[in-house]
Figure (cartoon, rainbow, N blue to C red):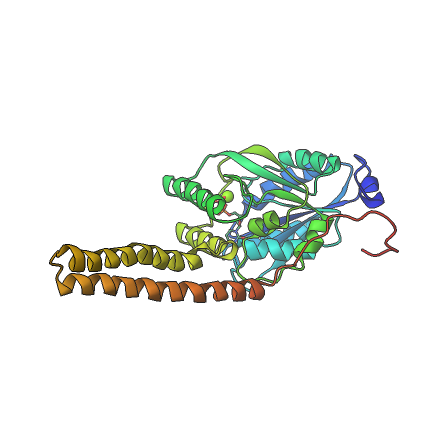
Length: 327
Ligand code: UDP
Ligand code: MG
């Protein structure tokens, strides 16, 4: 552990914690969130502030944010020009909080109860860089959302390198070094949680029960969630690209021996195999060849994808020894 780590993590030592709250049509629910946040954060020995990122709300959310900011200078607001989605709201909020010792992201609808924050901070004080959460039950998820969420996590675990436990949420604490690293990621279509899991670092999970949202409708429609799932999957897995190649190889593996068998049977055993049967198998073999060629191209497209996404090549967690004040 570096000197920096050791001094920061003495419990109750102070420092600054920033909360980041994405807001999309959350309206009056923000008052309840403010009350809850103030009660929880004022009881902790840390300076704190809370940034609302209004993701292009169509209701009165922004005027409520303005009134909260006017009443208490620890609250801040940032409004997008239109709806860019929660991932971007979180990104903007975390980037704006780059000076804090730790950043905590939580939803505006009280489904990420601020009462859990002291537990997140306690884990951080123990030395974890990322304290993520798993929701134990979701009070107001529809059957479609439940099945979709199960399927999504299964796919992500099966086909990507991410360590994404089922029901993990965006409610998480990030140490300042994670926040600094996050600023190096430039990829446009991003899954916030996925990027953080990809980074590694010292991570732990705590679980909590998600209550029903405080008011209003869930801002995430099934369509939006589906798009997010596809985006997340394709930015962390090249499996769909490789599938064509595997399919082509499979077809070739079946058709080549079949063709040889047919030729042998025709010549040596005298089986009367019709030209149309030969032609059909030969044609299928050609399809296999074409798919294999496509698969080869996909491998190169995969490389291009990796280069374009331009993630950091490696991430240093900490250093030991004399580094002459280098970060
Ligand atoms: N949200 C956002 N932009 C969007 C959709 C949602 O900033 O386009 C915010 C929303 O205000 C809430 C959080 O993201 O604070 C989670 O949204 P929601 O409650 O709809 O998601 P769920 O709880 O169903 O996962
Ligand atoms: Mg919610």
